[in-house]
Amino acid sequence: MNLFTLISDLDELLEIEAVSDYCPNGLQVEGRHEIRKIVTGVSASQALFRNAIELDADLILVHHGILWNGTEPPRIAGSFRERIKLLLDHGVSLAAYHLPLDRHMALGNAAQLARRLGLEQLEPFGEHRGVSIGVCGVLPEPVPAAELAEAVAAACHREPQLFEGGPRAVSSVGIVTGAAQREYHQAVAAGLDAYITGEASEWVQEQAAEDGVHYIAAGHYATERFGVVALGRWLEEERDLDVEFLDLVNPV
Image 1 (cartoon, rainbow, N blue to C red):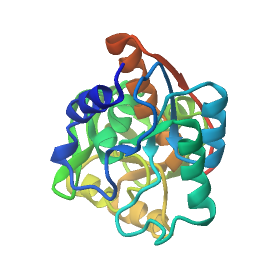
Image 2: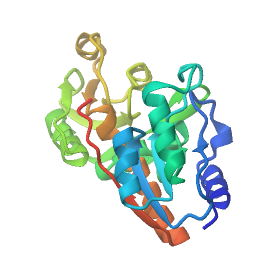
Image 3: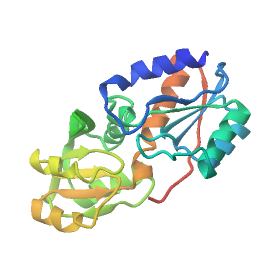
Image 4: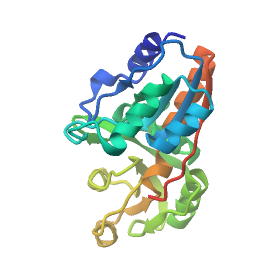
């Protein structure tokens, strides 16, 4: 498939124009234009690029790319240079989708995690920069917070931090993946029983106890595997492309 046709399809699917993001979404580095093999991963890195090159990837598709508004290195030097050089030397393209892949109601990180937890009646949740970047929903039957944390552990393949503070039985849950500590306050305002994200800050323990909302932190990386995996499946099914996910686990 042609690179630019594929990127156009993904840009439209993920509605990148609807989001004011911290990075350019879509194509970040242009390589060869004929796409047969795609490797997906959560975050761009030399390790990911080298593994993808060994797999003869034409395109690497990630959630966290190498370009960030106002924070990219002022010079193409050091490790930043090596990342770009790896791609250009081997003709491999790089595309990244950040907030658009967090918020998508079918393929997004939050929606995918919510479905694995059995949440129903999913709705957009977690306003950020004028758009919702997560989801909220209800469980078919109320469960103890510890049981919900066990389900999160099974879905994310790691033991989450549970800061208890909410009701004994959890019915309603909000999810914003990654580093979304601040969106916790929206879960409080919405009257939800529990909030799930990737990271916790120092204030979370006491705030959860005082606000009456359970806070579950399951890891930034672990909560953001879901979107690129789901997007890879979409590319296999809808565009008949060869897609492989590389899980370079990060403990954060």
